[in-house]
Image (cartoon, rainbow, N blue to C red; front, side):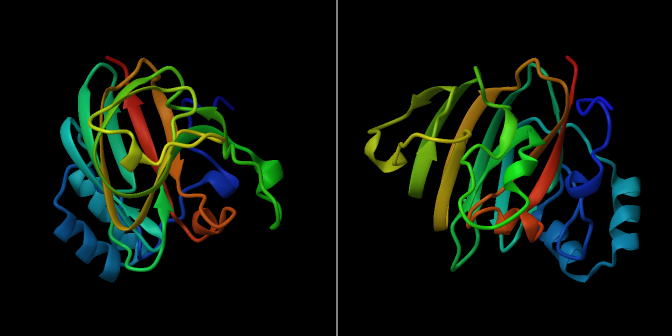
Length: 211
């Protein structure tokens, strides 16, 4: 099966539970209410009714324990996006990675796990500008072409692993970029605490449409 053009199966299949909402381009308040109180069937119905409109311009991506809002987004190749990543947790550090083909060998058990969660990192070769860093724990640029606004110190730049900004509780970061010519389905997730956050449901999907 071509993972770029088909829904994932098994561990990569999205686990639609009461904490997770498929909601694109809708205010976080409405999304949060549905994610807290809706049963999976209602969430699925909401997605069918509202759909997943193409996100463009400014996007707020919220990190909670242990889920994202939104956890499903539709982007289009060539569109310029400004994603503001915000960690809403009061107690946990969270990251944001995007990729394909989860490294399953490292997903089988606990203990030491390789820093590369994905076999394919979405951000490889992508031009991205980072700005407004606040309470950044660490940032791994990997193979992205990164421009930093302001002094580099607050970004806590390090090496090793996929492109991933990791935010402290209450932290935030702005990422501005043009959606690259990489259409198809991409997964995103948080692999803090040796994949435990991902196992607990902190994952999502991005569907990138051709230009």
